[in-house]
Length: 336
Ligand code: UDP
Ligand code: MG
Image 1 (cartoon, helix red, strand yellow):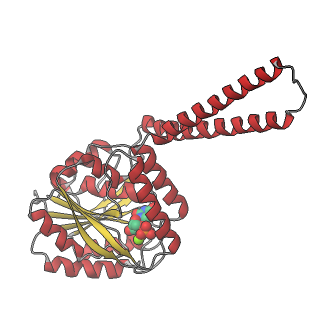
Image 2 (tube, rainbow, N blue to C red; image 1 turned 60 degrees about the horizontal axis):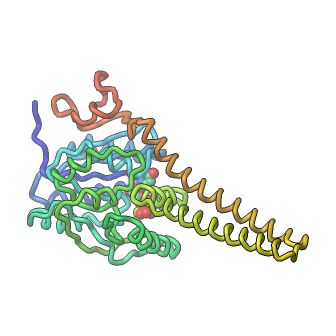
Image 3 (cartoon, rainbow, N blue to C red; image 1 turned 135 degrees about the vertical axis):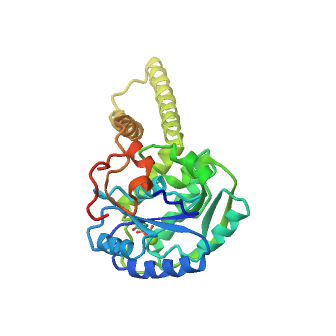
């Protein structure tokens, strides 16, 4: 039997969140009661190693509006969001974090804006509570530097808490790049956008699932996918250094012709040589970053591997997923 698509899809990536899930489900259920429209909630289990998956399935069994996508391993926050968006059937899709830093109550304001005709509503953080000074400072710097470096207009202090209209969603879904910086990609897509403001609450429980290494990966994805400035910078540095080398060459010849030849100059030779070596390595490394990303794209692997789905079955099963991703479509899931 064909099931009608809901009006709103909520997409939530989840990685080791067993401590927050009960509270999240509670707040979401309250929200569902207040919203007088049809809603599906897509929980993407991004390879959690704790009880998160069991809790999600339990919730799905209790309330079928909760659906579960189970990844074969941890693919990262940005990819988890992507999978949820691929599977979403709603006319508006909302992405939010599981840790209640994005209060579910803001969703009502987003839907209001959407009904006014906006095709993308992003939530801007007015205040960040309960985050370390280090996180605040690095995040602040990152957004501002990125803004200067890129050609697309990426709004400052916007995370991955946003509403997307179906039209913009389809446009976004056509972008299958591997190194994903989703907020930048949404700015690139365009459409009629607006903001709602909110105060970012502290994480409800547990600790951040974004260690420094993941933050660096996200930041470099952002810069490299949206900017060629590092490459241009290498070019400029190369140019400056070779101009200097040319000048010193001229100076050396002049000194020689003038007959003031001395054997001194060993220090300057070593300094110049090592400086040049350093610059070359740096430029090579910079280019390596781009080459590595090209390599990732060329391999053209699927973005993620789904191991199980709960909540999609029969004619209701998503056509999008069989198109681009591997999963056991012809092996029925016994738990379904
Ligand atoms: N997350 C995920 N995969 C990861 C890391 C994080 O799905 O590899 C989820 C996490 O469960 C949470 C959201 O992404 O719902 C944001 O993560 P977190 O709150 O730890 O990031 P922060 O708010 O500290 O930047
Ligand atoms: Mg968080």
